[in-house]
Amino acid sequence: MFTSLYHHVTDLDNLRSCYDEVNGSKAVGVDGVTKAIYGEKLEENLQDLSGRLKRMGYKPQPKRRSYVPKAGSAKGRPLGISCFEDKLVELAVKRVLEPIYELVFEDSSYGYRPKRSQHDCLEVLGRTIQQERVNHIVEADITGFFDNMNHDWTLKFLRHRIGDSRILRLVFRMLKAGILEDGLIRAGTEGTPQGSILSPLLSNIYLHYTLDLWFKCRVKPQCAGEAYYFRFADDFLACFQYKADAEEFESQLRLRLEEFHLSLAEEKTQCIAFGRFSRENARKRGEKPAEFTFLGFTHYNGKTRNGDFKVKRRTSKKKFRLGLRNFTSWAKANRHKLTKGQLLRRGKSKIAGHLNYYAITDNLDSCSNYVYQAERTLFKWLNRKSQRRAYTWDSFREACRWIGWPRLKIHKDLNPFRRAEALLMLF
Image (cartoon, rainbow, N blue to C red; front, side, top):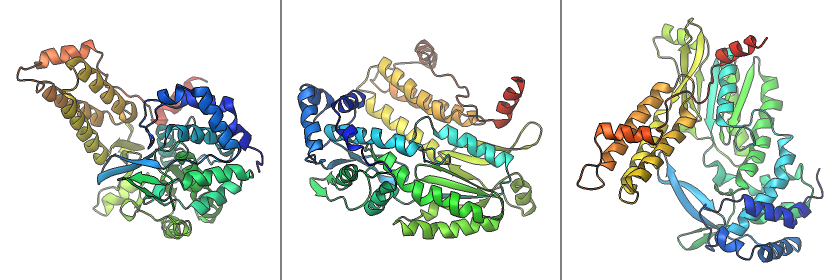
């Protein structure tokens, strides 16, 4: 139990360091204050902020509602944009709480944590399915998790480790700050807005007690066979040796989430047969082997060159179509705003960003298709900048070579067999 933490939040040096770390190019909050404006009287502003924090006179402003594109949603994913000063306080609180909780978070949790990524989660998941007794998988997702986090439970979970009432009071004020949308302020009765610096940590704390510890201490010991669990933010799945264990977990999961004011997204929740014997068993039933989607990749049964079972992945159709749609919308909207050189360079950055994530083992065909489609989209809209044709295919390819067009190669090797062979060569 940590009982004296608040002085770290109010410390001037810490607030000054937070100012340096906060990205000044991000969207501004309801007050319209940017990092540059706040920095014009930095020391005066920080001393005033520190003073208000010390006497508990600091009150967070409502967050500005904004939306970003989301597959399957016409309105988009809702974000809450904090004012710049609120971002400083959120970061200061995060710096205090994160080291405390990193010591207790489970290895099964990967989202929003230092030195952990989606690729790390995918690597351990693939290795577990291939090397352990896994025959059934429960894939699950929580409906509107960030919008439905219960404030009372959040504070109860924090009290397990945090004994400083001033920290708890500050977090409570942040949760209750509300959202400004269409000129109206909606009171914060539940949830924590995506886009807030502190929200990812609070979500991990909430799910640590709601799911991670529950699976480790209650579910796994009661299983008749082996059981494994993986979570990235509010997306998670569990692997089981026996079907009965998987079905029992799925049924108990609904009750567990309801206890903490959450619910399953039924359309994204399923229990499937998946593992080294699933292909053969499905063929005997005259069916196709089941697949599942996790972290933007569709996982399916594959084989190595020697005919052994292997988990393979390809970009999910949903993410593939969304990526191309966003690229097309960007090229169309910016063809008259940017020069040809700028359009090419930013197009290169967008394609490189896609490859940095999706160019993994066994997924080069999907990545090649994406690059093929994106190049043709960029070529099309470059030539619609004016009535005069900007490029032929030869000149377009030459321009791409000149700016260093991204190469199609594996950016992340997730083949456990190849990694095992490399380790053996060291000895």
